[in-house]
Length: 78
View 1 (cartoon, rainbow, N blue to C red):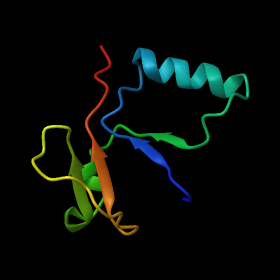
View 2 (spheres, rainbow, N blue to C red; view 1 turned 180 degrees about the vertical axis):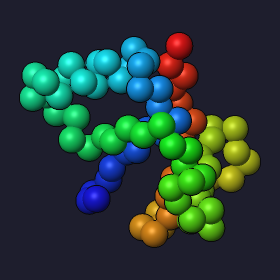
View 3 (tube, rainbow, N blue to C red; view 1 turned 60 degrees about the vertical axis):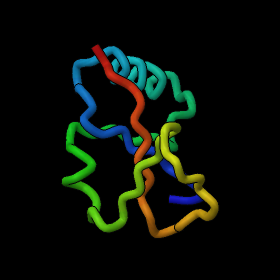
């Protein structure tokens, strides 16, 4: 996907956020750059391509690897 695409993993099919995505899709609102799945990212992507992004890292990202998969910890749907 270009230029970028977001896959939300470990996504509860009956959660609040999933319901909001379904509602927006039914209203033809733009959610086309997102995909949701119940699967773990570890089951979807080669582990050698994973890069974990964190605001707590001692390293600053200085270049972008187009072949990598960037992991951003984010939402917990309760």
